Image (cartoon, rainbow, N blue to C red; front, side, top):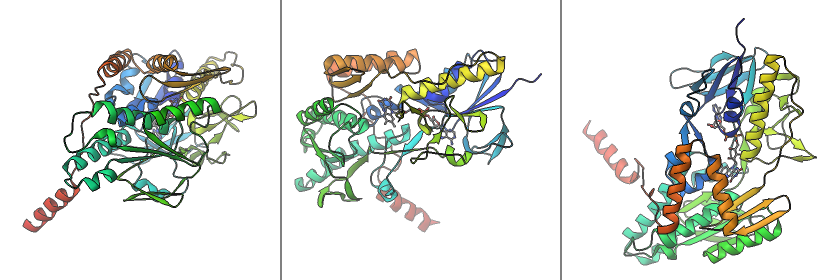
Length: 435
Ligand SMILES: Cc1cc2nc3c(=O)[nH]c(=O)nc-3n(C[C@H](O)[C@H](O)[C@H](O)COP(=O)(O)OP(=O)(O)OC[C@H]3O[C@@H](n4cnc5c(N)ncnc54)[C@H](O)[C@@H]3O)c2cc1C
């Protein structure tokens, strides 16, 4: 008898955990991702601020699964699901909307950033969701210092060296802290006309405090730490406008050439593909076994699923995705074997953390609430533990120690084929003229 086919869409935290949980299943597993790598998103901000290189937080999915013989990895973009025909559509560089049939389907397609209906902001304030975003942000930040150093008029330095982060959740706070460390330590003595430490870093949020998911006390500790690092924290007003010249907050224009979006998230379009009930954000409402209503063969997990536990929706964090992935994998395995099915899914909350600059983090786990160096050590240990491979763990560990001791960061390359758009346009014009 042919083995059942399980398609898992997404090689992020949830999809990878589901695939690994099926390693002994007598099934043909196909893991599809639009990229060729698994990405450790919690450290994206470190790539964006030159603390780590892209290859230190991403690893080829087929490399991670090289020993899992029942699994095929395909790089492709899933564009739809026909739940009645039990097939998905996949496009790649060569083919459009290729149908692939499944017996079981796991959708773990994550989330992207949301501009809360102001999509026109995206052009001026890129977000941070994948490696390409992180490298683009790194280019933008480093280029601002290059432009300022080349500028002879010191009156223009202030605008060029103003960095605005929109959104004071964990990503915004972590970015702001890392940026402050970059300008104060790593870039020290690298420039002659400008003083990088004079850079202005502004963190804006309409909420009344930073790190809203944390307790009031920890959020105050994080704000204090940011201010000690020289970050200007502006709360209680969102941005009204973002354009080429900066932002407008509560009627005041703040001139800047570098605005970074670190606010809201929107789920992948899995709810639209399935045409099923979603929550207000568009996340698919799943049953207590993570399957979709009336379709016990389809599971939705991680950031793209809406699951309520004790009358509260689970947060969009890596631990939720990993635990849901493991659960969905085990459940499918037990069904294939005809074994007893696991009890309904229950999330075990191991706590939340955010790092604020070098050697300082806030940590909240049940009744435990702490901030400072010990919290940072725990943060570092946990993040190393969850990196995808041993080689990444070793590389990041050594890099962090080196950076902690010397203040130096190795990944400060501007990798941009269009570094000088004006020059490229002039060259293009000249080529056209000559033709
Ligand atoms: C900047 C940032 C910082 C974060 N920090 C933390 C943190 O400190 N702690 C924490 O717990 N969580 C953090 N998170 C959230 C955490 O990363 C997510 O909750 C987690 O990644 C969700 O896992 P997932 O499997 O649902 O989705 P993801 O890990 O996002 O994986 C989705 C995968 O699906 C693929 N995909 C998407 N659409 C398609 C398609 N149509 N076809 C094929 N492939 C597709 C993507 O390429 C991706 O590989 C952070 C997120 C970001 C962006």
